[in-house]
Amino acid sequence: MISQEVPPVGLRERKKADVRNALQDATLRLAIEHGYENVTVDAIAEAVDVSPRTFSNYFSSKEEALFAPNPYISEQLTAAIAARPADEAPLEVLAAVLVDMSDHLIARRDAWQARMRLVAENPQLRPRMAAQFSRFEVILAQGVALRCGRDPTSDPYPGLVAGAAAGALRVALAHWQPGAAQSLHELLTELFASLAAGLPDVPPRTAATDHPNESHPS
Amino acid sequence: MISQEVPPVGLRERKKADVRNALQDATLRLAIEHGYENVTVDAIAEAVDVSPRTFSNYFSSKEEALFAPNPYISEQLTAAIAARPADEAPLEVLAAVLVDMSDHLIARRDAWQARMRLVAENPQLRPRMAAQFSRFEVILAQGVALRCGRDPTSDPYPGLVAGAAAGALRVALAHWQPGAAQSLHELLTELFASLAAGLPDVPPRTAATDHPNESHPS
DNA sequence: AGGAATATTGCTCAGTCTGCAAACCTGCCT
DNA sequence: AGGCAGGTTTGCAGACTGAGCAATATTCCT
Image 1 (cartoon, chains in turn brown, yellow, cyan, purple):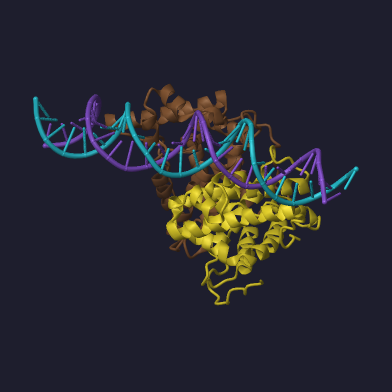
Image 2 (cartoon, rainbow over the protein chains, first blue to last red):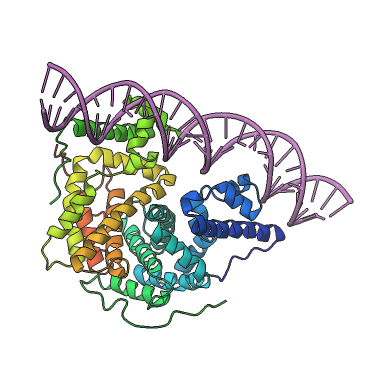
């Protein structure tokens, strides 16, 4: 199970998390308003009322500010993968963990959909997002390898499963648009089912049903 | 079928290709010698004996110089995907096309293995490589979508297949080390078989056989 | 309260990347 | 051969990024 939110205990850590979130929100907002390329670090820092130097203390680049996940995601994912029943196959494990994690994403639905729309409209952002996802993929691969008692550097299997799973998540996010017919849960579940079936020629059905989207949990 | 090499006809185009290749080679060589972070664009330009400004005319960044594929790869892949028999399933198509393309990679075996070793030793390069692979993935997705008569922006299936296939290629390249037990062909074929089987719990066998690597075709 | 630990900030500097205009080279036509 | 047209290389200038360092401010803990 992935914990609901970052749990900063002290005032210091809470403030730090606040600044981090504010920087990310401002980056996203300004990128939507003025176009990603036209947003400077200075402008973001000014919007959050910190010095440009402070921005660099949190993020090493603009795209990291746009796409960096919850800083605890690594530990959370690793723990969640390890916690799955031992008899589950790796792909099942990742499916369960990522579907579980999607609750987390749904809670920030507007921000995520805005992010993905930004990427869809600015193709030059796609590689930058992929770069962030690659870190995510490494975490998954290591988690799988740990479960299987394999060495991810010498055994290609964990990387293969992690790559397919991360791809499914990426695709699901890209197609999780405001007016989409399927909820993120449904989409992810369907994509993982397709992976488990060996990517048959024609998927069961896609974008067919007419479910309403999940409601805001906030 | 993917054509053997870029066929620049005129002197102008040949020169241009030469400069491009020289810049890529120099980038790789210098990165190995001095570490990626310590290589400047100025140094690369000087090694190739062009102005730093010219480097920017060919590549928009250092990582592009390191990882950018053959500039014709997009058209070649698209054509190769379209040329496969109509009754082949998308995953089979990509498997066939990428295994075919691996001949191309094997011809540049030393460069590729050096590249991958560089990435393995410098984790910060992984996201940059992933960024380049994402363009590759888009090409695959569009090729699949075209074959299936689907819209890649509204149908997640092409993206899912392309993501899995690109992941397989990435993993295969990462594990295609000088002393590896399996050839790149074998590795790729095995990984695609695993994908087609729905990523079963335990792959048939990995890193088990003791085949010699393929010989230099040059 | 007071010391230790951590965060923020300004300063500075090397490096990246882009636009622009001049000089240069190749391909092609007369 | 000569010369024009279009593409390529180059130098220059300028904006932005990203990192180290030291000073300052804030929070934590005893």
